[in-house]
Length: 448
Image (cartoon, rainbow, N blue to C red):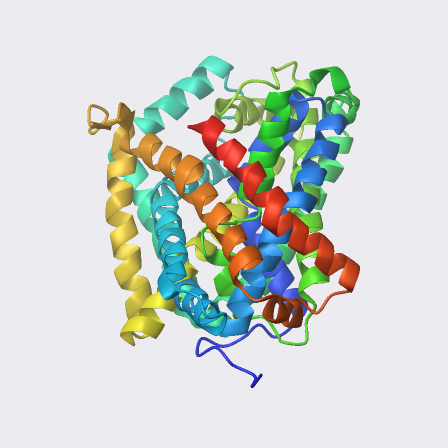
């Protein structure tokens, strides 16, 4: 087959692709959600279940998305259509790409609001606004932020502009340059915070909370939590990995590359937990505090520890970088589509899309104040978009991608693109045809 190239450009190396995809995967969920669900579902035992889910579901689907994108060298919609045409099946499979891109756009609209909270807390930790605050005072400060639409609008606007600038500059000058700077910065910040956590009195308790094997806590619900998170943490079902795969060097091994991404993503999540929970335990706080822990309990904990203000500032910078790399990946598939389908320049496409998600974001931030009475199926705009993307659109996209790659793409093409050993290919093909779609269908059904 004649070598194709993407009009968007390509990653300079396999490692840049690994860092970019890891940056997409590592987001707010990794920094807080994964450590929290690990501690609540059996610690080390849950990690083993999660890793099994990554290997049996996450890795096979990610490999599929990468090879579909790389084979066509186009945005998700056109990549799926071209692969379908090559395998002599209907081009209607491109609709998976449409749904994936729509998921990314909808997620960005509320994700940027939460990222705005993070930017606010970077400033708050830098200026010492919460130094010495009690839990009640920190809770009141967080609630006051949510009830202040103009402040939220300012941070939401800033974060949207930050993301537009990176995406508009293209694959090499934008995404790749940002990846070269932000991902090493994220790793350094994580290591510094890990070192700090090791000096706290709560490190041993945090370690046991995360890694003690308690198989009595592993329930059917735990398995579903692990399966659901293994799928969502790798940015699957949104077109992101397909778009990033289209920029991947031809000579790079898809199998080993995807395994490296899965390993890095999991490692970051585990180390993040070892940064957070020692600080919580050192201050005698509840590790099961739920979503408010990042914005209420942690600022209080840092504010009461030696050097805590500085390390609290670093922590929120870390979360901000993770949110930024993920947000870039949410916009990229749709921008690539607008450029290729409508011949727009990248700056124009990025600004048009950015303006649309910014406007939708106003409805999301208004969910906490002036639009709190506006509901869809009993949910605020913020909660509705979160629910429909995480529980319906992404898993549906994952199931359809697995069915397409496993049953409709001719094996000669997937084998040629993946270029892996016969045993590994047999494992991938069995997983993508049977294990992945059935497992996601179970999670999909139970989440509804």
